[in-house]
Length: 216
Length: 272
Image (cartoon, rainbow over all chains, first blue to last red; front, side, top):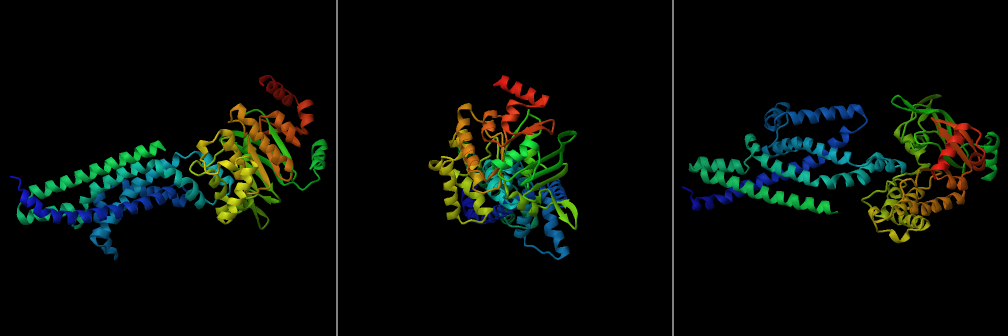
């Protein structure tokens, strides 16, 4: 039933699709890491006209499905004159969605910093920006790196959703192969195997990182 | 220094231009009023020991001066400028961040828990603010920092992290870190309370040395009565958010007039 020759012949195509998957994952994650931090900082601001809308935005994005958000960005934005390629729309949607999760992760890291650190920064007359850059972020981020790693893996596994906005990533590639060859078993199974291997290896990496950080 | 002190303490006539002036300052946390319409003038270079039972408001008093707590009412002046307010067309309006930073630059503080930055070496703990707040070059900041760390006796610990040092050493670095900013007024918030008894002396010695240099105004909230007596020009006894009694150390410690001061000191002596 399983055809090894066919499996090997479709591998290069699948790896081509995997490349898109990885590009989308890392771009979206980079976006989420930066925007998540900005959201976390803004939601803590004492300026209510900044913090309240940000909090509402985080709540809204977290409470609606990623797929609906992707459709909105890809199919509705053009109605307002913003036409995005599938990759850009996917990175934006995925990145924005995960930035709200990461903002919560940052928040937990920031909350764990003793009040005395903020007070010392104030007593030394650091500006607000400098307090974040020199004092808060360098202490808040290392403990949350493992959690962020898990979100990276989660995001990687969410990328097949981007096939719904016509991005030809690894799963979409497998589907196309299946449609052309009338063989779905090998391509879809191989996609599962690829995800399994990469996710498993990454989770080992995250665990290693966690151990190392705990040793410090 | 000593002339000013005699004047302030003996008769309360304050014919100096105060560097710090609390006027009718009150502070509440929720329903609890911890400072009640307190007035206090501090002369330039004066050393004030603030004593009183825990919960009396003495820490809150200096935390307001460091802008860590905002007074509920009243005004605080620092070096002739209002701290929490700005005067706009003759009216008092709440100060903005820019104004707060300007006035705050005249004040430094040492904390009970040291509050060193754990992710930075000792040297960087001391250079970070001079570089990013005062705008010094790295070389200049390091030079100044090393001079200060030398002063507190820790020149050989430059590359170590706070967790590698004893509490006494950490507190001395915290002192160097505050000194390097060259504030006119230095606040000490029970700086030896978190230390093991055998480490208290080395920290007090450093503070004493700074006090003897003379030109820095110092407000020390402390439970070290002997130490307060040695270095303070004036002792302020606070209870229930108001100043009950103040005067030169000999007077307060040997001849307290107010009953509450007497009780406090009696209880305190019994405990120790």
